[in-house]
Amino acid sequence: MNMRSLASPATVTKLSLSIHPSSFLTINPFFFFYKFKSSHHNHKPHFFSIRTCTSSSISAKPSSNFRKNPPTNSDPKLTSLRRLFSKPDVSIDAYIIPSQDAHQSEFIAECYGRREYISGFTGSAGTAIVTNDKAALWTDGRYFLQAEKQLNSSWILMRAGNPGVPTTSEWLNQVLAPGARVGIDPFLFTSDAAEELKQVISKKNHELVYLYNSNLVDEIWKEVRPEPPNKPVRVHDLKYAGLDVASKLSSLRSELVKAGSSAIIISALDEIAWLLNLRGSDIPHSPVVYAYLIVEIDGATLFIDDSKVTEEVDGHLKKANIEIKPYNSIISETENLAARGAALWLDTSSVNAAIVNAYNAACDKYYQNYENKHKTGNKVFDGSNEKSDVGAPIAVHKLSPVSLAKAIKNETELKGMQNCHLRDAAALAQFWDWLETEITNNRVSTEVEVSDKLLEFRSKQDGFLDTSFDTIS
Image (cartoon, rainbow, N blue to C red):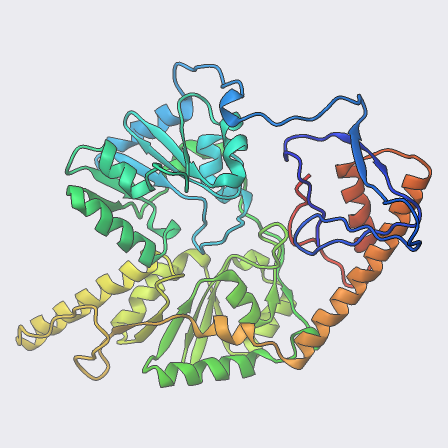
C-alpha cells in the first residue's frame, strides 16, 4: 500500500501538519484519506491543516492557462521517424506507437518505452500516432496536465474521453486521404485489437500494415536505447506457491483435452510466472520475467533469454519436463506447431497479432501443401474451429484457462496473503507512531520524505522484496 498525494506528481511541496494529540489517522487502501476521532465528547472538533512553508495559498488553474511549450521548428525524432516511412520495405503513411510491450503489460521495462521516447510524455498510459505531417498523443484524464507540460509544439494532445475527441482510428480516418497505409508493430497489439483497428480504418479504404522485421522507433533510438533487463530468474518456493509445477501443468493439459486442443501459447507474464512457480524482476515493481510459454500434451517449452536462467531454475524446469529455447524463436516455433498439425489454443485478447498471424499463415501454407499433394482443391482453411482432417492444424480461440486457475487461490496462497497484510499492518503501525512523534515535535517533512520513511519500515519486514508501484508524490 503506497501513500498517494492529491498534489500534482510534478510538484514537491513542504507541508506542515497540525493534528491534535488525541486524534488518530486511518488510511483507506486506495485513497489518501484522513479520519479524525476524539476520545473526549466535549472537546473541540479536531482538525488537519496543510499550509505551505511560505504561507501562500494554493490555487488551481485550468489547463488552458498553463504556459505552452515554445514552438519548435521541427522535432528531430519525428523527422527521423518519418524518413523511414518511405523505405521500400515500409511504405506507410502513418505509424501507431502504443505503450505496451509484446505481452500487453501495463508497466514495462525501460527498453520498451517507445511511446515515451518518441513523444517525451512519461505517463503510464497513452498512444502516439505519427503521420507525414502530424503527430498526436492520446491519454486519459489522469495525465492531461502532465502531457501538456511534456509534449512539445509538434504534438497534438488528444484528451481521451472528452466530448468531441476522436479515437485513434477515427482520427486516422479523418486526417488521412482514402487508401492510406497505416503501420504497426504487430507484437505490440493483441490480435483482437489489431483486427478491430483494421475493420474501423477500412471504412476509408485504409490498409493496416504489419511491420514484422523491426520496430521503427527502435531504429531511431539506436545506441541510446536502454539494454533489455537481464537479472536472473528465481524459483518461487513451494512453501509460498502451495502447488507444484507438475500439478499445475496436469490441470492445464486436462483443459486442453476438453477444448479439443493439443497445445496452447501463453504470453501474459503473470500467468507464466504463476504456472511455472518462477519470479523475476524484468519490470519494476512486478515479479515477472519476459518469456513466452508453449504447453503441449506431452511437453512444454519456455522461450526466455537463457542468460537469466540459473542452475537452480534450470533444474526446476527440467524436473517439470520443460525445455528452454531463445525468446525470439517464438514465431518459428509457432509456425512449427502448424506444420505438425497442432490444434492450438489462442487467447486472441492477450496473445499478440504477430503470433496469431504467424500461426494462421502457417495453417494456410499447410492446407495449400495438402491440396497440392492430394489434388483435391477443396481443403481450404478458413480460420474456423472446425477440423477438416484428423491431425490438421486448427486455431481454437478461447480465453486463457490459466487466468481463472491463477485467480482461485489455494490454502497456502491465502495464508500467505493474510500474513503479508499482517506484516504490512505492523509496518504501518510503526510508521504512524513515527509520524505522530514528528508532528508533536513540530518537524516538517515533504511528501517524498514521508513516503521514503514508510518504505523504510516496510523494507524491514520479513520477506519484503519491493513495493507494487512507486508512490505518486
